[in-house]
Amino acid sequence: MTIAQKELAEEITDIGGAYPAATFPADAIGSTMFDAPGSEDGTITVLLPRDNVQKAPAQAMVRIKSRGDNRNYLGVVSAGPFAQPDTMRADSAVMVAIGTRGGDYLPSFHGRIHVTLLGQELDDGTLTPPRLRPLPHSPVFQLNENETAKALKAEGDIAVGLAVGHEKLTVAIPSAAKSVLPRHTAILGTTGSGKTTTVSGLVQQAQAAGVAVVLLDVEGEYTRLNEPTTDPRMVSTLAANGKTPAGLPADSMHLLHLVGRDTTNPKHPCLRPFSLQFARLSPYVVIEMLGMNEAQSDRYLFAYDVTKTMMRRLGIFPQTKEKVGDAEADKQERIFNRLDEFERGYPRMTLSFLLDVVGKCRAAVGKGEEFTCFNKEFKTPEAERMFQELIKSKEMPGVASSWGKVNSLLRRLNRLKVFDRQHSDKGVKFLNYADLLTPGRVSVIDLSDSGMSELNNIAVADVLRGIQEAQEKAYTAFEKETRPEPPRVLIIVEEAHEFLSAERIEKTPNLFNQVARIAKRGRKRWLGLAFVTQLPQHLPRQVLGLCNNFILHKLTDPQVVSTLAKTVPGIDPGLWARLPALAPGQAVVSFGHMTRPLLTAMNPTTCQLRMVD
Ligand SMILES: Nc1ncnc2c1ncn2[C@@H]1O[C@H](COP(=O)(O)OP(=O)(O)O)[C@@H](O)[C@H]1O
Ligand SMILES: [Mg+2]
Image 1 (tube, protein in one colour):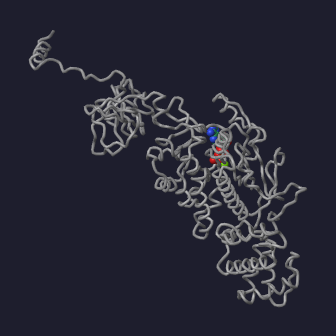
Image 2 (image 1 turned 90 degrees about the vertical axis):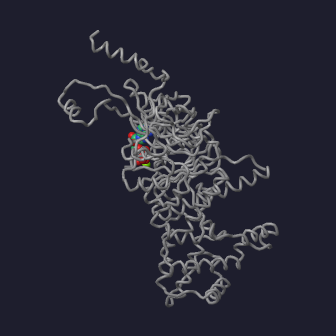
């Protein structure tokens, strides 16, 4: 021992011996740091010894045992792990020079992570919002997979993917929980980000869970879900996950398309053409969808009113007791009295009846033009007298050009030949909404060839309302114990921005109100809506406001991300920052039952999709 060493040893003994090593638990991976001026509520910085730097990957969960006050906290790694040299700044000239000149000097270093606090853990394991912060130099532990799964609560029978940053943590949705799917979902992401794949996986899993699924397929992408996928990328991704391609179970899928319009899969084993019933459409929603101006809508409502009165007076609806007997006539009278025209149209009013009346009005304001009604009910002298009397007493608005425009809008709709058609020999029927509500049935409604986007929207609105009504009825019967419990229902609206667009929402308040009502009632009646779009900026905020669940695929537009961040709660800045760089099939998944949103590798689909570019 040199003299200097000896003197040092004596000095140490004099002042009480060596400082005892901190008794840090052996299984701790790091400890909390003192707060700095930049510290923020809800997050805390944790330092890791060199050997543990890679033990806390992004999104991993940790437990912090606050030193001294014995409070436990759970948190998630929201940034890092970053490596930092112990005694020098990482960006100091020396470190930069060594790093760039190929020097092999590696100074000792440590790791640093940012942890977002999820809550304080009580003795029985429940999490409560933290009132305080963990104290400095508190030991930090890794949670194992079981503990992580329990804490994140991402459990359920509908598996959607695997959580990124965890070994084998399935992200799933409980199909039975009333507080999850019936509180509605938005699936957002740019083209090619994986939305359609996600939706098809969701459909497949929901079907297996016995949910009745209705998919409004605007592009005809889902018409082959009954077949196994043949996409080579999907097949190999499936193989890597130990799965094999498979279509939906035989007979579980029905493919519906508008009569006279094509489907993208004409060979489907259960193909059903359907027509729409004009009488079901609220006149106010029709006006909005056809984009009528005030002059046109005045005339539309006038003609609508005249048609109604004629139908009533001529006994078309409600029918007379002589024709249908007391019971039926009373029933029709009750329907007549309870009619809410913001919800639906006048029973049995066909587009053809309305066109006849519009044609007659047009002839009446035009100069001497003759018009012959198409419907035999309106061709009688009695009907003619009635009409002439009505246009006088109700003060028909004039201006031939406005009448002409209303006429041409309706004619365009009529030319599509999808309204009010029933051909029993050709199997064409109105949509039977109650039929769609069969447990484990997937009904894909192919609207890819509607020929007119307004018609698509009319069809979507009608299907939404029809299903909601049928579900309401089924629940009433169930409550009176005359029928078994109705199935859980999931309705998926693809290209939702075309149906409910931010640009038009001011002009389509009735449509939005209808959807909002369906969303609200759906919570009580187990009816979940899912809106899918690549243009979330075109979806009104009000629609996102109806949603409690989000699957966010890649979104590149920073403006869109920042707007969403204001609307969608509970997603931390670290996750928002990752959205622009997500790979196809990755998404931030945030559902009502989960403790926090999870970055998720979504499951590849086993079903065949028709890719549109
Ligand atoms: N979960 C996934 N796993 C693996 N690959 C995926 C996944 N989702 C999407 N992809 C890939 O991304 C492509 C585009 O996906 P798609 O679902 O059509 O996106 P979008 O509907 O958003 O346009 C698919 O063809 C596939 O190759
Ligand atoms: Mg798509």
